Image 1 (cartoon, rainbow, N blue to C red):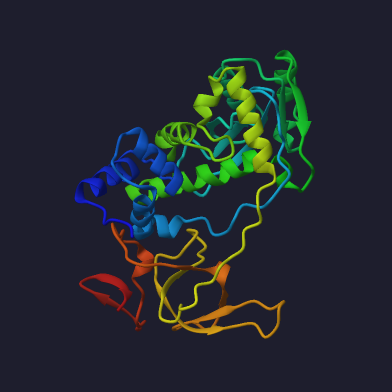
Image 2: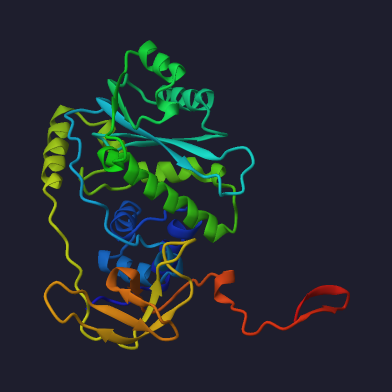
Length: 342
């Protein structure tokens, strides 16, 4: 049985998670706790995370797609690059993020851009390359216009960098940078959600630094450490990457007793809804190829297991507009000189 978490442990976790913005899951948060000499177990970290509303709402909705990774034998052999569209965020000066990740060390880079014009992308790429200690052998990108422009090709030619293109309409073929994009977008959205702010540029480098200093299961180390590794250590890292390629297929295990359990459902703005629902009934498949689905109280739609997240207690709840619903809409009127619906 897991010992109850102490008040001191709660305060320590709260500080690195909410205050410092180290918004990762169980394993990375536990590794960070060990580095900081917190007297806490992995299971205690997991139990604390399960109760955090922000973690429930932004928990990834599904497992990453299994793809064949690119396995290299050294750092700086190849980096994957891509763009993230952040135009829906209220930042007047920057609307895009140019991202890059070393396909061996997993060290990531991110540069905010005002737009994705050829000039802006080349400038951002130059900044990223200047921040990498050694020369890059090759770059993997899609064939978007910003990556095949004359200006971009000249930048690579001037630095003797070969360009490799991912498969058209197949983002999985540049899967490592795509996965990093998903992680950094989630970290940014969580940070903004907690701080009720739209200034993602101010905190971008902090979040990238947190990622690079966090333990990565594939390499069994942090990207920063691998960047500084000697040849013997690099051999170990390469072996770890090869072992990870054969990752096991994970299957969903549905708990036996779920009726009346509280759940969150998939949401458009955040991965999971801030509103909580209750499982009313479970419909089991009639044959081996069918899927179990659930009826939630107050909703007509049927939900499959991947559409819901079963939750328990909640700590550090955050007020959001979604939690408050309109119960009745009455005719337009004027109250104290203010027009509206009352």
